Amino acid sequence: MITKTSFLFKLLFFLWVIPVVSFANRSNAYNAAHHTPGVVPSDFDADWRKGVTSGYYLGFTSLADELRDLRRPADIPVTEGFIKNLYLDFHYANQEFNMGFFKDDSNTSLSQNDTLVEHDAYGITFGMTLGDNPNLDIRIPLAVSHFEVGHVDDSGMIAGIELFPNYRINEYIAWGLNIAHLNSSSDFPMFDESMTSVSFETLAESSQAYGMNWSGRLSVGRYFPSNDVNDESFFLVKAAIALHYHLHKNFTMLPFIRFNYSNGDVLTDAKWWDYGAEFILMPNAPWNFSFGIAGVGGNEIIEEGMEFYLSTKGNF
Image (cartoon, rainbow, N blue to C red; front, side):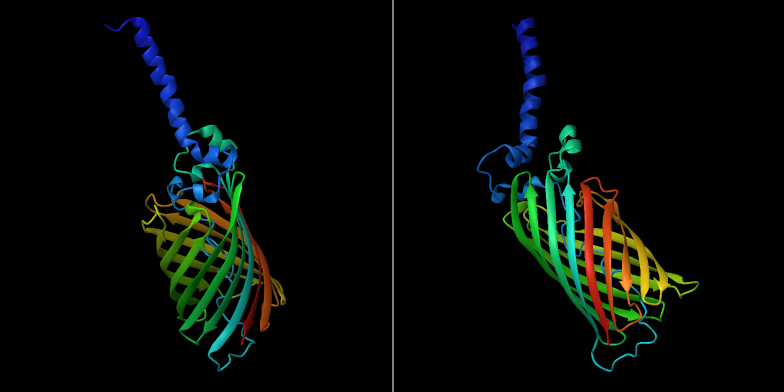
């Protein structure tokens, strides 16, 4: 026969002990990163991550060279050679993620007060355009990455290739098919992942008037992530627009904004914004230079995200 005292004790045990055990299981990432001695990056299993988080793939959210002039400067003659231009981009990107990065994130105090995961990428991208019309844009991104989870950190490598065959309908509109593959590797299992994507993209740019014009880019793509636990594909739509302020014949300011939306539950956040500004020096010369800054907003997992880049491009 169950007495009132024993029933009360069992009720208290259920209401207090079980949640404490559950919380301990949910906080394994936090404890491993901050309190457990001898923890190494390989202890952070891939299945600790909630899903695919945008941000730590160079090229996945990078905006460099995405909204530059669609048209070739009119006063630069087109070479008869096969290579039409070359460019070189230097990147630095930093992202900080909150506790929502992990699969078990139900403790709201940790989610709100702890930026547990940080990633830095130091990258360089080689690129060229081949052919006349249609064109083939080729990019090869390479980056040294540094992951930090609490007091545990490790360096890794990000590498890939991007092919963008495109056709210019006229000097204002173009479309193409973007095929890309990126791979991230380090001693952290939860960061080791490859990303393959195929997307249809269309670009448009207005004619210059009153010292300014605009350009836009729409991308609808299918993305295929792959690691130990995340291998479900997803669609991602990216719509971007930029304004080109021609402040001087040798200086153009280009603020831009991009909205990203994904369906399904693969990404940790289904929608977010990218925004920033680029400053192009000598835009009408065979060689031009640009520097820019881009950020991330409206993402529940990315607490802070910033990208800086310096680029040079030569038209032949």
